[in-house]
Image (cartoon, rainbow, N blue to C red):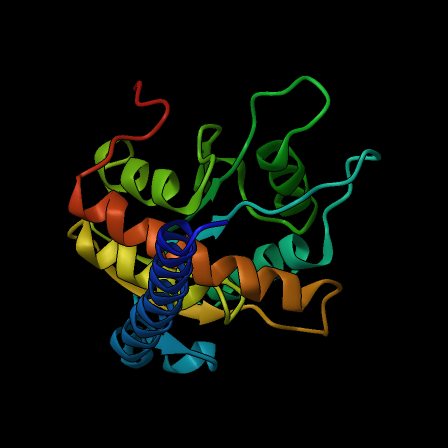
Length: 212
């Protein structure tokens, strides 16, 4: 390897290191900003949360036997308690509901019915494939103006950021009721998902499915 080639490779290596560090700093700053913005809209005490039209249950995993993962069950149960305190008029369930053998929305719906929530007060969004889609469709398809989002604490800042960027009057209620498996993995994914959320908002992205 001659000196010129060696110099080029060193320059490329330094540039790669610089860009990696810059990307890490950007990810950290965006997440810190998102947490700071969302802090005042997040509640741990249901009784202190404001009233709204709807409480939104964001989708999460269901198992092959059609039972909810711990995270999803806690989101649903927290939404039920919000509804039972007369904070909202109805419950919107949003998630992936299109596969034959995998349906987050129907699984939550069945649980809500079992817990005594009237069918007419349950709204179903089968095309909430991610948080952005769920909130975009809540506003533009279901014509919701204000809502309370039921999800885990690590997820709430991004959800609040997206919702308020879309023009929704949004609040969050923490649905953390236990220690979750793979929580650290979810938190790590959330760091990158927050960056994606900024791009979605900036470019006014459209959901994979709109419809009626």
